[in-house]
Image (cartoon, rainbow, N blue to C red; front, side, top):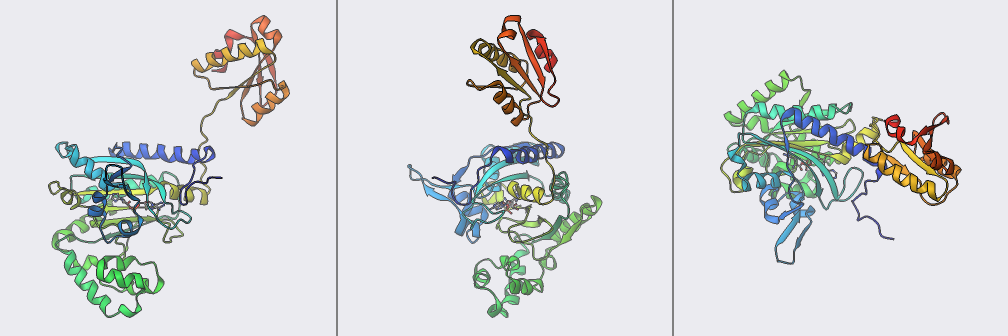
Length: 415
Ligand code: HAM
């Protein structure tokens, strides 16, 4: 027996109501905030990700699905959506449009991680990117959009964490302060953090090991090392967030796992927070477009994992609307009646009425049992007598009441 590859999941029909419901909310929220949909390829040149996400990140070092294609190109299945959207922004000259350009995507994302609850090797992200403006009001708007999106499901107990990690002007001084602090504590750090101290010191702050977290809690804070411009940006952002009454908590250890971030970073956590539970996150990436070959272009975005939203909807018992399905079942007795049933199914569908037609030569009782199992509202029964008289029997499946009606009245009646 073949099985789905480790860390992937089939989304069976019974799960689809969750997916469609979430998708509908995404489209709603995107319309409200002026985002338009973009679809980018599933794979890109490897360098797009190594340059943007960062050589020293877990994603690039350990998690990318990379292979050489038959033409000798080194290809990577997208491990995130921001870099491909920026690539498309540059490739198609979207900087010529009024800025910021606001784009959203719903995309399969691939990361070779150790699978566990809420962590997959193929997962789906809803992401949005606002490219071309550095106004902190845009940061507040993106955070507001993310928050309102989660609130639209009625999810309770979420927290909204915020930090500013500065820019290329002020970050180096902060990193020096951080390294000095950690240099005295190197013996207490886990082996991963010892590496991080050398290669990616900012990531020391979000180690999930208890002792490392305790050390991180007393570490120098990025907000105390911001240059005047970043400081002003952060102050104004906090003021806008206050105006919007968003319940933000400043988390000095929040740094995010991708290297392109500058200034604002934020995450949304469910009540029972843990390493694999972050519902969504994002931030500014003011240098990324330039890094990819464009002019300096500030930008901010956000993404959330759809599987994680579903985990939380289920945990909190949030009911999602059922998907529409055919309400009419057509049963028949005899070959002539079967011909009529086939024609009638087609007529009803042409009239916009969903139909499931019986198949084979089961007894009428068995056919009605099937209609029941499918939760059809009505069964239409055609027998020898009905064929002769140009009528059908319409059965209400809830009350079991039946009446004979002329065939040509059926579409109107069912509608
Ligand atoms: P990220 O935090 O790596 O950010 O991923 C965004 C969200 O995707 C996470 O908060 C989580 O809900 C979900 N996620 C990540 N990895 C997995 C996984 N293995 N299985 C299931 N869900 C997962 C980014 O990818 C950035 N591109 C977000 C962004 C957009 N920043 C600016 N614009």
